Length: 260
Image (cartoon, rainbow, N blue to C red; front, top):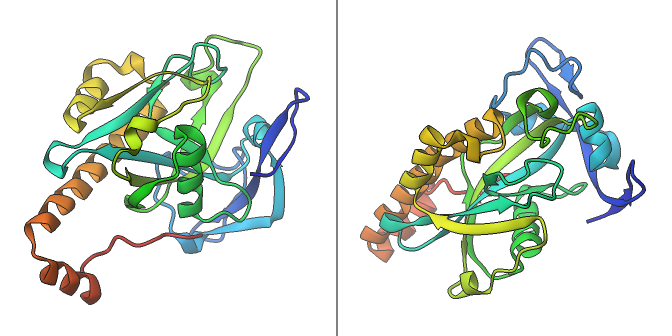
């Protein structure tokens, strides 16, 4: 992942900037002017295009609310009917969302396909390269959060962060045994596996454990998509190999790679 010197003199990953074309001809490139685009709006691939190849450190993108891409990943383990989801708690030392729980996330590098971002995130954030299978959950959505207003900066008034990110949701299953080899960096304080029912309970009764309401609504959006995928997994296991092949080649299996 290419990097550059950020605003505090440290190396930050570079992200590519994008523009979003809206019906009627309007174009959104940054936070200012994005008022007409709702949080979690579905983003069709043909409405998103690179912004003249522009690239900036991620900190600069967050300072101005510049449109970029990233992924949020539901890492699963266990049989479909009893599957659990990997949740990570951020360290109290990080600037954004200290002590908050969430999924594995990563910004996309310049020209990086969604699936490549997912594979890199698993490698860099979890320390493993062995992925058994993965796939998209629905279509990408626009994540919008003004952390100074929505919360998530640990009460620091000297910080601002405007996140305008086209976010692709993915499910991932690690190769057998890989979950025992997970390695996390210093930004992760704790981790645990939880059923989707437990995640729903956290969304309903323990909202303070999440970063802010924008993150909560993104997780609330992701959970039913994960449950639908798990239902498809369970149905697939009940089918014989011949029926699975027939569905795959007839187009009934819609788990496809989504690239920009």
